[in-house]
Length: 111
Image 1 (tube, one colour):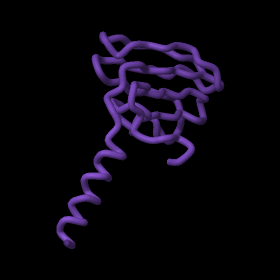
Image 2 (cartoon, rainbow, N blue to C red):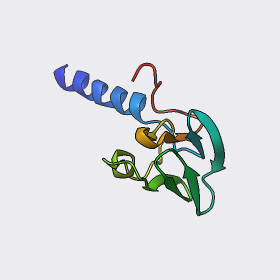
Image 3 (tube, one colour):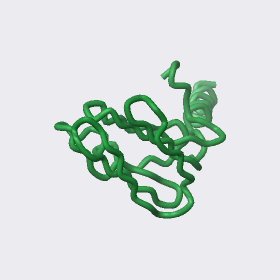
């Protein structure tokens, strides 16, 4: 019974947190949507913020913040985003990157 219960918990955890792959990247600057891009072909996008230019790199099925002028580089360290609901926030430069898809991995308010 303990083994079956443990297996059920693992299966439900994977099901609940395993959102689908994203198909769209939403880029915001100063809280406003600047660009919405499909994750279908490779491209580089420059977004200007108060500290300078943030470079966002798009490849088929994934996106990331390649460079950012923020001092701690937290959004760059976030790496490639592939799952629906994932985000990289460059707060000092007021730029964000979010991946959207049909099945988000989690609700932002509940996270």
